[in-house]
Image 1 (spheres, one colour):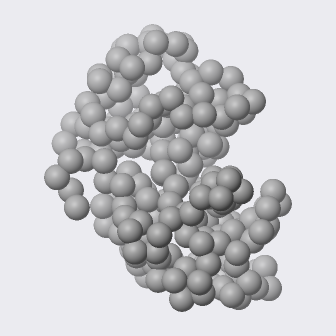
Image 2: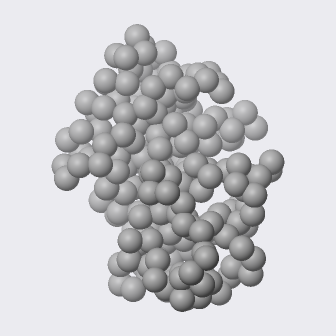
Length: 220
């Protein structure tokens, strides 16, 4: 199955393409430029590299957040009409889960952190290893509240660490483990793989009811 994966929830936009378990291509950019102007060209480029058209896709997966409100809207707002037009399944994927998925083979807890501003973070807890699994819902809380939920050794990942690494060190000590910054990216191929896993279990989302997951209450 050829699955297109897209995430624009953070400043790093990424588009990936897989065919089942096989990697085909990925286009990831961390540049100061609006996702709205680069997303469709990136999708076109990925398909061109693969010698495909959108009609060759079996499904599309999209990062639904949490993250930048504008960024999430761009990704979801682009992929929903695309899937509707080609009549292929759409699958919403948590941006935090996609970041944690980069470290899925790590034994122990994985805690992705994004800066939500207003002295809060977007975060969640996952368990890596043979059976990658979610341990908490996606949250928007003060960093202290997120760290209070972690009772065991964890590896921390995500660009929120640029601001909150000192708070994590203060809580867990200087030996706390931070993932290399290359793992901070919600990669398009990770989005595609997580979408593919849902599709294999018969899941998909509705074109019209799929909405961004802003997490923070009061944001619509």
